[in-house]
Length: 319
Image 1 (cartoon, one colour):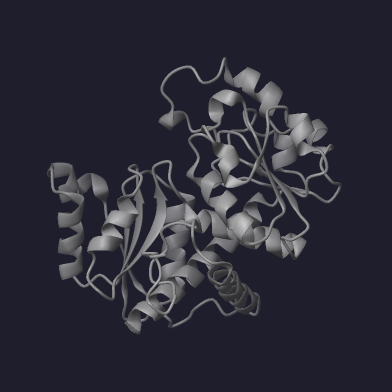
Image 2 (cartoon, rainbow, N blue to C red; image 1 turned 180 degrees about the vertical axis):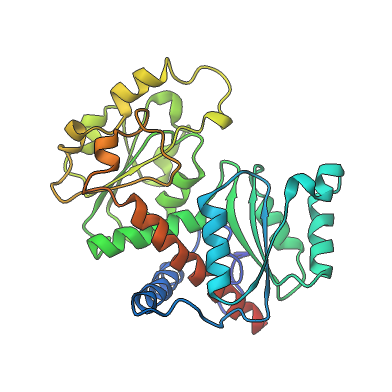
């Protein structure tokens, strides 16, 4: 089956989604990231893998962690990094997305990192860029956020070692979350035998069971004996209408408190993609507790994004 992310040799040339990527590709990214983490621990933080290449960060949606970690990652690989100010760009004057891309190609772009409110934007760009230019999806609409999922997979592997005996619970606003979709595809591909989603019915997409997950509406039941708890942010900016009675009611039933976390396995880890809404999705006692790995996720995210850019640029150079 044709996959626009892979070349004819099955090598990764764009990263658009975790859906459909073979396990060997996911492991290639995780293994390369592990190399960067290990070298960083030895004091090596600067590499020449992207020397002479130009990386354009195109963030059509607000972001702090993702944009900053991509910028740090590209600079550690010695790339020339250009952060496009979207509010001051020609797209704000009516220029089409593809016209913007083609103009940036003419300026010597080698790799585009794209975050966009419209699902499929990164795919559209990847279909129209010139040969040799890579596209990395930094989040598109409700569709996908592959590097967040990969850094989550790296975090799980770092603390748990293997996926084949794990129970993972993804909790919260599944309906609007591109992170949840990307996590589910990555977890199942990597061999996780049980992925649970825990949410009120109003925050679950229709047919979510088709992805091979176990659905729970009762958080206490869903957290029983899990190894990993992946909390999600309430995507208020993507909601229209009454999905919840109130944030207080949501926290009562779906906020992660020490009492609810006690139902998970004693060595369970707690993740969150950020930004966190304390007292809504997660209690501060949990967020700041010794089972939370939220800050290590951010640190690992730099290495994972370095790995992705290194791999796609390497494979594009051979085209």
